Image (cartoon, rainbow, N blue to C red; front, side):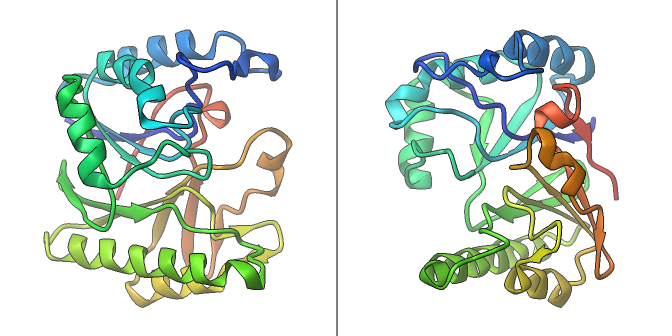
Length: 227
């Protein structure tokens, strides 16, 4: 049994938003399925840190969730900036149950014990946050702290996931970094960055290791989570 992660699947089985138009994304859903099922077993768990579906409404994501449900293992999803379909956790879980999506859970203001890890995290916010975004940023800071505190109660090493990287090139979201430092977080898995942005992804900052797990950065293959 193992814990894996992969971000930014950008599925669009029910909406006209094909990723094949981008270089390197050709047949990306077939590649995800093949690589995922080759690596992940039904006893494993995969965390998806955001940008799962292009659907604008929850109902627009059904085929995307059915695809995800068909893949091996259990899955935990948190919100990304393009997950406009995102509803309350209760509404989303009811939608999943109603449609017999039985391998997927939502991570929001809580934590899960998985394979000896306390899985926690939130979307995060822009590393170059504008003054007008401060309220959103502070909400995300609070959600991260709430999730970490829930994880600490589980009594196992933290596995922290964000969608937005709190550092990118010379930009730093200090408010998120401060929370990570407060709880002595040493490693964070994140997505959001694609293509040419890979060169500006920061791997280490102020004693914290950052691992980019956007699917196109890792050959559309889940990445194992390590302590």
